[in-house]
Amino acid sequence: MLTQLNIQGLAIIDSLSIEFSHGFNVITGETGAGKSILIKALGFLLGAKASAESVRHGRDQATVSGLFDVPHGHPCGRVLETYGIDSEHEGSSFAILVRRTVNNKGRSLAWINDMPVTATVLRELALTLIDVFGQHENLRLLDSVQHISCLDQFLRDRTLPTTYTEEYRAVHKQVQSLVGMIDGFRTKQRDADYLLYRCNELRTFSPSREDYAATHDLCLRAGHTMTLAKGLEEAQACIDQGANGESLSHPLWEASRILGRISTIAPDLGTIAELANQLAHQIDDLGFQLGKSFERLEINDDDIEMAQARLAGYQELFRKLAVTDIDSLISEHERLEAELTFLESASVDVSRRLSELEISSKQLAITASELSVARKAAKGAVKRRIEAELHALAMPGAKIDVDLSAVHKPLVSTEFSTFGTEAEAVWARVSEVLSGLGEHGAEKAQLLLAANPGEPLLPLQKIASGGEISRIMLALKKALAAGADTCILVFDEIDTGISGRVAAVVGRKMQELSTEFQVICISHLAQVAAHADAHFLVHKLSRDKRTESTISRLSPRSSEEELARLLSGEELTPSSLANARALVKKAKERTV
Image (tube, rainbow, N blue to C red; front, side, top):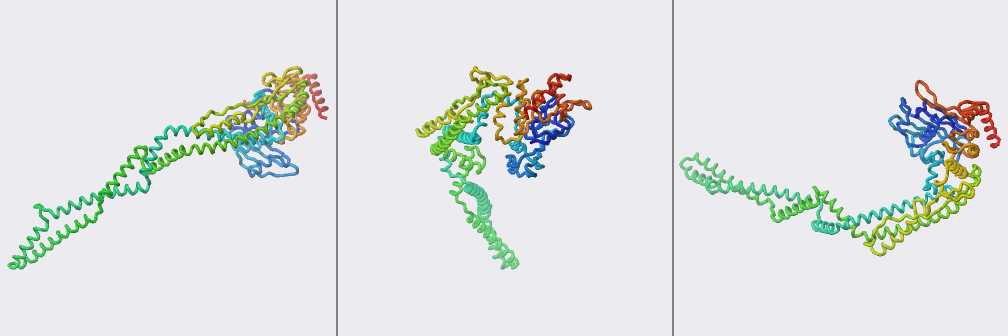
């Protein structure tokens, strides 16, 4: 049960603390006093979307905290264990403290037993703790799409719908993947000739990072070698061919010979003759060394020509495939090869996927059949239990039934003729199976109602009044109460559209529910509130020129006065007080 709810700075609530009773709690108050804010606060606490607009003007943040007392073995304990959240066990129950804040920037934080958690964890916890029924739930009951989930709540095995839904989604994921593959195949098939031509071109050329690096390096070195060869050739030409076409050493040799001849007359000229001789030798040696350096250059014109041609081939591929470097060229080559392989292996892949899809579809059909059998068995329970509750809710002649009609949902038309007759046959079998299965099974459900004896059963949304819808919703909850894991039931003005004697019956049903669950009910009817174990009044007040909503638990006497106001308006009269006391007395007598 929810033992305490604390609200700080939320909407028009400045500061509020409520201690709920374990049984039937009723909250009343004028329209606009802030009753529904309490429900919103509870929703926010348990994972509903938070917004900056929720924060009271002038506050930095809004905070809601709730203290729950839960019996041992309750499913919410598994949620705590899953997320490693500690809890203090005492006696036959344990406490769960949930706290959540949202600041005026819209950022929210949450804790369970002082451990930080996400809103997703809060929502998971809420599914095991609390069930909120509001006026919008009544509207959902008018939507026939929701009726199958109502029926499924009466199944013996409540896991069947979940199992089916998981299998259905997996199968349709297979279908989408297969259809996507076929669409991709058709797109690529239009470019098959281009793919084959380009792949053959690339295979013939056989580009690689290593080859490109070696070719590029050879061309670069060849350029350097040619520059060296030309320089050495020109230098040697300068030595070997002087101004007169003779070697530069020739005049020195001649000068050395002449100087050597006349040195007999002038001996000091011998030294000069020797110098001329040495210079001539050095020039000849320089020419020889230049020649050797030229010969050592490895210049293979054929290799250089081939490397330059291959580099030009790489540049041409860069241009054709709109890439700028060797890595991009290799990646594009791999992509084109993959697309060509996809086209070449598509038939085998499609056959494999179709075979897997057929197996999954058959399993889905088996699960759908089990679910259909379970739903047909549950129809009797729906009819029997809800009719019994409706009769008790002042609809003595009401009859209810569930119409189950087959689903027809054709698959997207896809052409498989390209992949052979067997592929077409398998797809036809799969399509036949899946076209009879929807997201919720092989059937659609629609609740039918005959509100009065002699009237035909007709779809709920066509004939039910607001008050009848409220009673049907309450009957559903009452019929489903046995064995439910939820601790707390919250009703937000579910009594809309009813009054008088019917309202008293609704109040009694709420009281009956409170023997198994904690019930928190927002109501505007004295006949409902008279059955409460705890009566709370929400009212607005002005403080420092600001509107504020507050709540107080009423004493038995104050509760009777509030019931009298609900019956007759703002002015209390002896007769309205007497009526209120009579309502409370009658409610207590029926409880006993």
